[in-house]
Image (tube, rainbow, N blue to C red; front, side, top):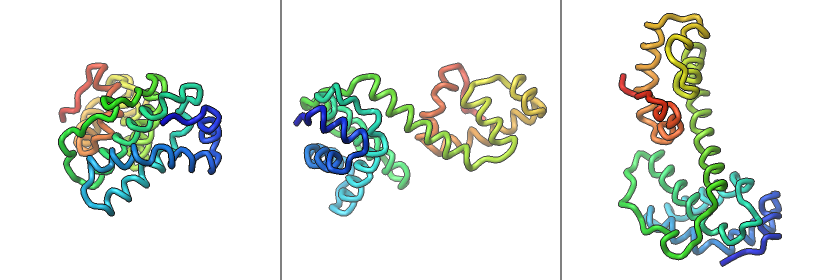
Length: 197
């Protein structure tokens, strides 16, 4: 199904009626994706609600001029939200479900996916960072997120190199328990860093 660009534009602007039309139009898609991750009817309903809330939060990344890509954009968003829900509940991700995109749904544009992913990862970093204080927060931001070396971090925070090593060890151990956060730290890892204590 393809919704008119005008409806998608109103949805992106936060119009409740347009959002309702979006939900009606793509409810079967969301139900089919959720069913591949959750077995019980209650779990499926809860997961679908989470998907729709995430969809509404990230609506600004939907491009109304690419109405034919809305289905693919939503499919990717729904799958990611289902995986996040399983992880947050401490459950293992099921075997990879059939890919909705392989069943004829057009892929979302790279700009849309990149923007949605960046927003999701930014929230993961912000949530983790909000739990930290003082040197912990500063070190996390400068070393893990911005990828600065110990020397520069130590200078900026007025701490020793040994303190940097300790902070890295503890924060890396905590980060390894949060898969979404690990994704957010991809920039650090791509720059040659590692999370080994």
